[in-house]
Image (cartoon, rainbow, N blue to C red):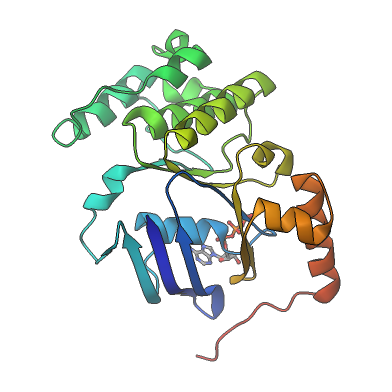
Amino acid sequence: MIQTQNLSKHFGKLCALNNVSVSLQKGKGVSLIGPNGSGKTTFIKCLLGMVIPDAGRICFNDQPILRDSWDYRKQIGYMPQIGRYPDNMRVRQVFDLMTDLRKDSHCGPLDEELIEEFGLKSSFDKPMRTLSGGTRQKVSACLAFLFDPAVLVLDEPTAGLDPLAAEALKAKVLREQQKGKLVLMTSHILNDLEELTTDVMYLVEGDLLFFESVENILERTEETRFAKAIAKIMAQQGKISPTPQRKTIAL
Ligand SMILES: Nc1ncnc2c1ncn2[C@@H]1O[C@H](COP(=O)(O)OP(=O)(O)OP(=O)(O)O)[C@@H](O)[C@H]1O
């Protein structure tokens, strides 16, 4: 569904992504894991066309993504780490605006399941600037699912959500995955990823350390729990490079 080949991105001298090649398939729950600053958000933004890679190729449904051909993005629902919205717009207006922008390309029914489950309609008349951080996250989550996209990209989806809302979101992600959608997500809360993950994409300092199924990871770490297995890998990784020297390029 999504393939990257030798994807690289530098910010000045800093190498944020270094020759990353992966294949993300439909029906999978891919967790993008790695220490702070390892390139997770940069990778996601490259897929979404929000960051332009310096080198490499991205294919969506076997078609290479070319500059200025953004149509594929309609098939991706994106929940950003921090959702930014016009402060004075009411929640209802944000949803109306998004629906209006998509009315020519989206003809199926809107997926309002999460709006109902979060009870978000009770906040529909509130201006965005007055929302709590968690409610703002709920708006971002509901928008990501609204147009029933084939791919969901969720950057720290449960951060700031109360436990009930986090569980509702996880159950929704699982249902969509079971329908055959591809879900790519990041989180530092490994327990939140446990039920949703089929494969792990592990980045360190812009390098893809491994892309591996959960079964393989459990087997090679001799652990039964996903969170423990990943923590073990992270600890080993920390021992290998206790004072990480970020790769830079000579300009
Ligand atoms: N626009 C930018 N300009 C300069 N440097 C950037 C920019 N965006 C990201 N970086 C740098 O690239 C590196 C990778 O950042 P990125 O946000 O992709 O990491 P991350 O793995 O998502 O981190 P976190 O877990 O903290 O969210 C970091 O060193 C970051 O400071």
